[in-house]
Length: 605
Image (cartoon, rainbow, N blue to C red; front, side):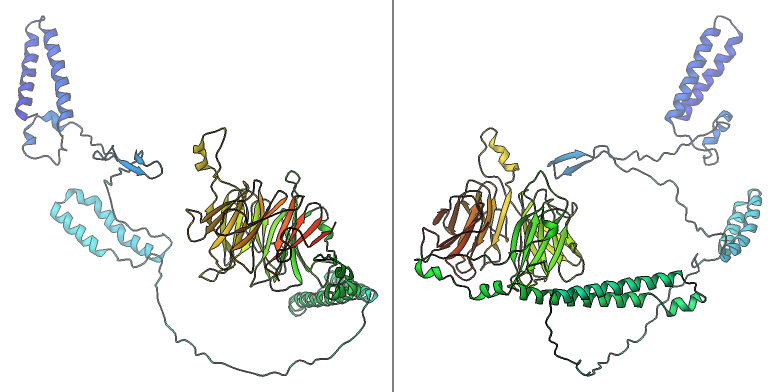
């Protein structure tokens, strides 16, 4: 409000006060007028900007003396009065705009640059000594003029030391010349060799084991005596006679002993199973001469593992590089009574009494595969949805690489794993298919497993008792996978609904081909190694079917009269394949000889 109006209000208030001594009747009216004027004056204060007395101009000093004595309160708030209350943000998940609930509106009213120096430093004591007289002179600044105060403040600013670094640290860099490289060559004499020949039996092996156990007990007794004996000079004796070289020597002796024992055991087994080895190479059934296009199978070896007697053999896989070595996975198909352990045993035909390698897992093994170029790398699919990679060159029996819940673990059983060629970066990778509908590519990068979901198998069949719109959110369970021999990017996927899809790794939006093969879950798929356009399928039924890649209907169909357990093409012929049933029989077919009947039916168990 302008000053003229304020003066008029005050004059009216003064006149009202003088009229109070005249008449008593007008006291109440004047008192009401004064209350109205005071309330109006308080309202004017709130609507006008009041400046402090020291910062006010000369025009403001003309006002009454009552205003100079009043206390001026200036309140500062951190809120921004100009902040926007209608901010929105685009939500890509909901595909709409959403209001922003929290908006930062902080204002900085005061910003002072300062330095903090620890009081124990030498620079802090110097700085404190220089600032004390400045603090004492600050008390006398109130009675001096502004010009003299400004000169003293400028001189005090010049006198402060310029601290370079509060930690007394100086960064320096030096450069040294690189040392030159030199190649050195040397030649050594070859190690001496000698021929050794001896007949070995079980008693010789037993005596060697007995001798080794006695030597081991003697070494343990010596170690105990050394620990109990007092040490007069512990510093020198611990340094000179350390137990580390003894442990290294014992480990080296044990390693040599185990290797020698394996060689001896293999020699004994060759002598024991010599008849079977001769039958494996030269046996021929004399009855084949009297049979027209029929043959028989001869059982040879029997393999087993003592610790896995309560488990089932869930999968088999031959080593592609060593023809006498194969892997067997031990698990259980009884899903209500699962064990907390599983094994991958690698047997060799040269030693059927005990596996050559044993790998342990935390649950049952459901599938296994051996790398075609690196035969020491074995991958296994577990019952709990994890995949484990074993390196046979390491000493441990546990997995070298294993997935977990944070790193792409499947939500159902892993039914099939398959090694593929190395990627462009040279890393080993393999594929896995699980009951959760995912086809996942795993890559071994240094010490970890990286995963990528290549395909999600959609549910294609129509639902009877519900809306068909649910098909978009359902996934079909994968059971089998097989890569085309002549194309690394094409593969077949068998589902639990009996459908087979031909897909590619280049894109996963659409299938190349679909085959309504069976009405039960598909357990195995296999391409013909000689004719890559043909593949064979088996499911939980009595029928085995052969398909062509370009036809959705089977070209051949074989009924074996019992539920099929597995099927496989022969590695030496494009027309021979074998079928195993749950009754314990093996059916061998040769399409070149007979397209309708098997050439051999043999009961194994």
